[in-house]
Image (cartoon, rainbow, N blue to C red; front, side, top):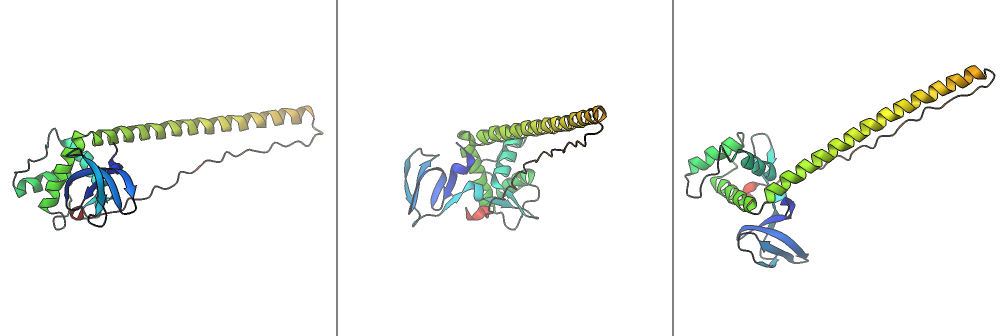
Amino acid sequence: MRFHEITSISGMGGLFRMTGQRPNGLIVHSLAEGWTRFVSSRKHMFTPLENIAIYTDEDTVPLLDVLLAMREKQADTPPPGPKESSDVFKEYLEAIVPNYDRDKVYVSDMKKLVRWFGILEEHGVLEEEIKAKAEEEAGEGADKVAGDAGDAGASAGEGKAGTTSSSKAKAKPEADASVGDKKTAKASKPASGKADKADGKDA
């Protein structure tokens, strides 16, 4: 189960996995309660988690980045319990996102963030994202090594061609032979688009 499959639904607690789509709504699976059913878009608003971000003093931080930071620090900085005071939640979020916007991020948002973290951890969603990120980085590293090897091979080939051309010119000075350099075109990667930003408190 991947992060981009998960949505929140207005008026309904918890998180949901999107399993199907209809013109007037979505078929969703409740991660907390385990049921699967159709939910009308006429009565509810769907907010995919990948579209949510946390406001900071400078800009915003994607929700996934915040959740992964929570997971990384949970051994030393565990999430507060639901009955903890507002000050405890504020101190916790400050430890995770030191520059979060104190005016735009409310304690209710912090409590929702902690609840969502617990649900996603229970279903292994964050673990899947970490594995996917590692595989992606490993693939990019392999592509870079292959590209460097290809460039080295092309350079070696050009050197051999020049040597052969020179030897032929010496053997047959009357021949006006020339060797054209072959340039290797490198494919440029498309620029990745930024995800839409959404206010955490609206979700």
